[in-house]
Image (spheres, rainbow over the protein chains, first blue to last red):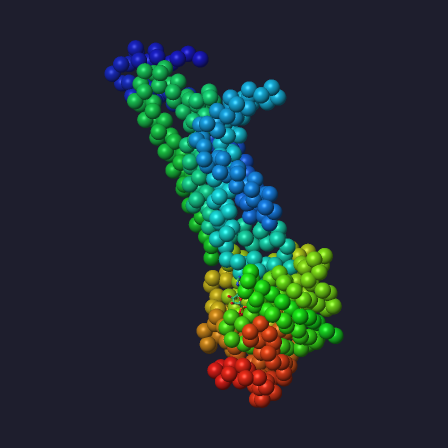
Amino acid sequence: MQRAGVRCIFLCKGDRCMDTIVNAFPYLMEGLQVTLYIFAIAIVFGFLIGLVVALFRLAPLKILNWIAKIFVDAIRGTPFIVQLFFIYFGLNSLDFISLDSTTAGIVTVAINAGAYFSEIIRAGIQSIDKGQTEAARSLGLNSTQNMRYVILPQAFRRMLPTITNQAIISLKDTSLLSVIGVADLTQEGRIQASATFDAFNVYLILGIIYFVIIYLLSMLASFVERKFVLR
Amino acid sequence: MTMIRVENLKKSFGNLEVIKDMSTVVEEKEVICVIGPSGSGKSTFLRCLNRLEEITGGHVYIENVDITDPKVDINQIRQDVGMVFQQFNLFPHKSVLENVVLAPMKVKKSDRKASEQKAYELLDKVGLREKAKAYPGELSGGQKQRVAIARALAMDPKIMLFDEPTSALDPEMVGDVLDVMKQLAREGMTMVVVTHEMGFAAEMGDRVLFIDGGYIVEENVPKELFGNPQHERTKAFLSKVL
Ligand SMILES: Nc1ncnc2c1ncn2[C@@H]1O[C@H](COP(=O)(O)OP(=O)(O)O)[C@@H](O)[C@H]1O
Ligand SMILES: [Mg+2]
């Protein structure tokens, strides 16, 4: 594709800002699509990982508790970028594994979010009064039914603000995927910043786009929260 | 028919021996009231009857099934043993109706229509049909407790356990809940009731158990236990509460 931005600087020197916006914006929107795609998949898998790890953590089997604890500690105790490099460069150096950068990015964000989600979910489950479980079990519900119909629905309502918070952190983490060459929003921003020679305006727009997305995400979360408010 | 048989029951929490040795028998349609000082193990005793507490020693038979047997399907047993708690423990995220139909639908797999019909009948019985769509947070304590009773009855239990069902209620609400329990007793429900309502125990109890120090100190018909207690500890306790 032609670097439209470059040509533009020569054409309209006096009105640089508008040009940057006009020329860079379509590329940034493409990057945004990639970012949102990665985020959506990673957050869903992250949540499922979090749920399973939380249940492992609370299971009566000691071995499951340990697996969960080691996983969470390993993720919390290392930087995101190191996890990303390990999965993309480290795992890819093994003969039998071949991950493209987008897949490696999704996997890293999902695993990272999963560890934090699991702690949120565990705390949420433990915050529900023991009397709830006792009432459910005394009615003949088994422990799975108790979790599914009584504990988790209440815990999720309570956890929603913290879950939103972690989702926002994970969304921001996706910008680090540009480092391994994923064509996400930040990567497109970097390309456009050099293509237009207008780093100031491109990164300003980039920030505004992230801000708006995160703002919408928070709005969605508080809407859901109000809708399912605990009676 | 014997509904509950407790044989040399023991229960410890770590080093704390709460129940040292208790034995008793509850026949069908009997109403047994359990009294005793705070912390004497009344709740623990009751919770051993549906194995909400793991039993440390001895045996508990529900309709001749030994529930201390690890092979027993405890979820199956619990369907026959309803329980009502001091703190109600309604499910706050579910409407009154959903609270009542949850176990029949998920445990007994009965269909929604039949479950709801039954739920409305039970809510009628406890005088709360018009609250079916309300949420627990919108109810008074007395109403919550009556919903909790309806919820337990929805499983068609053969035995009902009550753990101080009126202790968390404002005084003006106690009567409504006791009325529901009296009606249930008259209909022939087998009941074990931990209570501080000595009036209820005297009126409805076929027998009263006085628990203290990890033992059933005294067990008798209410007239005898209240009018002519045999043990010093029973006398001391009754002189404080009567
Ligand atoms: N889950 C538990 N862990 C440790 N101690 C407990 C537990 N439940 C009850 N206890 C102790 O057992 C004793 C009897 O408790 P409880 O059965 O609730 O008495 P009551 O109902 O007669 O007031 C108390 O000393 C209480 O602190
Ligand atoms: Mg008690």
